[in-house]
Length: 348
Image: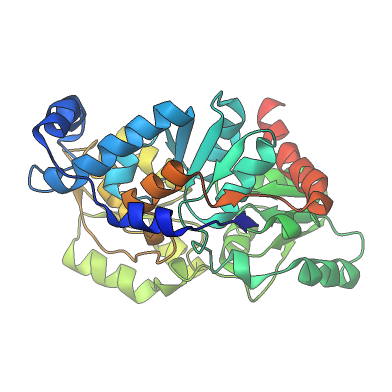
């Protein structure tokens, strides 16, 4: 749940865009020097005033910004304090010492940050930044599945609401789904809600995987095996890296599949001459500047929900301390326990 308060004054402040003054230019010069491989000189005068305000507000509010790998370059490189995939953000959110956490990502990520930091104020820049996958299943749906398959352990992808997590035995991410499934010692497991992640996990384990057929990511489901074939025809030397939320046929035709962090690490460590990331577009933009020797073939899809997070609404939520994330007390303890069980596997 998000508490959103708007006043006439806050709207007026929002309409007052900061200017690129000589003072801003001077303050932001060290930042630009650090990010100039990711942000062009032509873009900088537009972005710098917003970045300047966000950095000032972070200090005033004692705030940190958690940014998913799918954030745009300006957020990822210029204002974020912690970047990563869902697992990394879930883990690192527990260690921050700030009073305020801004979750630059979609709504379930902000809820996860609040679950793991109940005493901190968690803000989301745009409360309408949802997720097609998270919205594909409800707590009632999970309860129905549990009645249909009594006694079968339920593993729930973190890309879900707190209500759904609260009905779960343990959470997982795309990075650790196989590990989580195997840790249960069961012959059959419900892995929900992503039908494609479930199929890809099923190919890597002897456990029978049951799933929720309606669950899919609107970004990753659009990739097709025919698209992979065309890429290989046009770019015969390309290395194709796919996210496991893609259909099974796409993953089978790829050279490697993994979480966004795993994809980034593959590029950094293997240094392919040409690479295409079969995932959200911003991912390529964010790691291209860190891997100048690799040519990135941009064959990707944009997530309309991730794109709702901007420098402007990050500034706005910090300025007015609005769009605070709260958790239904009935769901809080069981949902936190499901996430903690996942995190405890990394310590074992």
